[in-house]
Image (cartoon, rainbow, N blue to C red):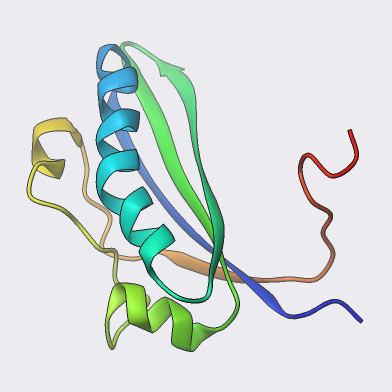
Length: 112
């Protein structure tokens, strides 16, 4: 049986023109903090255009336990974690994230 993995998903909207800058910013803030937290198994930042100059961005991170997520997010891991410059980019600021138990998975680049 595969070990338990928990997916943490945060989603918000940004201006399409800011995609590259915002993804770099997230990599330098949240991405660095993901990697520094014991129990983090990796992350991805995904983006899709919604039209009218707006894009949706999601941060997907994989964790070994809810305790590992608490070490990253604090005592209430359902609350989104924000950084000082986020308001410069974000069109909305969702209060909550979603957590999922990953029931089946394979490595993204495993033997390909």
